Amino acid sequence: MGAEGLVESGIHIVVILGSVVLGSVCVRLVRQRVLQGAQASDRLNSERKGQIQTVAQVVAWIANVLIAGIGTVTVLGYFVDITPLLTGLGVVGLALSLGAQTLVKDLIGGLMILVENQYVVGDVIRIGDVSGVVERLTLRATYVRDIKGDLHLIPNGDVRVVSNGTRGWSRALVDLGVAYEEDMSRVLAVLEREAEQFALDTQFAAHLLEPPTVTGPLALGDWAVTVRVMVKTHPGKQWAVATELRRRLLAACERENIALPYPRQEVLVSSQKEKPSSVW
Image (cartoon, rainbow, N blue to C red):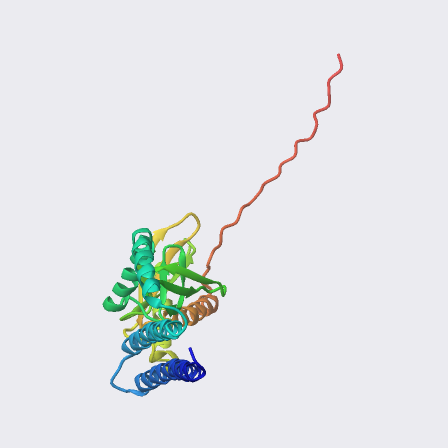
């Protein structure tokens, strides 16, 4: 190859590399534009916005992989004959496809998660023993950040049962253990009155879908009678509502002198005086 051929090949390679970079930048800009448009739209609910964010993330990842792959193969074509390489890659790909059943299962699982909209980025889910916020979702794996800050990578092929705590609606549950000596009618009346006051608070009223409900007794334990207060909330708001409701119910019980027992043990120690021995 002459000097002119080298210069021409160099120019082509530079153009290809520039096209790869430009393509990646365009993919990133389009992704950001889609996300900004979805977030600014008033006609989309939070669930649909999360789905758009997740799909945009996956599509951008696939586009970047394709752009980088095509650019790499095209540049290699200027140095070596890529026909045997492509043939070898086809054979290797066939061998890998036969042995990479787990990877194929993960990809199919990820596709089903996206198509069925089982969960998206930002949802709070539980998969097996792992629960937390979905930080990232690809066709191969789901990235979940738990409450301790640990990031769990779960292959999509291993996802069998998913519990989503941020879909449709949620429910805040607060269980109280009341002493057996308390008048149950009075206890229920106090809790109902406090729950009604909580529902009128403007800070939390917007999170509620229904008025709180007080039920009980639910269970007769060893040292307490269980009473439950529950309220239907918007998805993802059940934890904040339950925390504040629990605090107010505890304060109401203290104010009304309602005993909330806790497990304890009493140890009785007895001593026997030595009897004087008899002398015969």
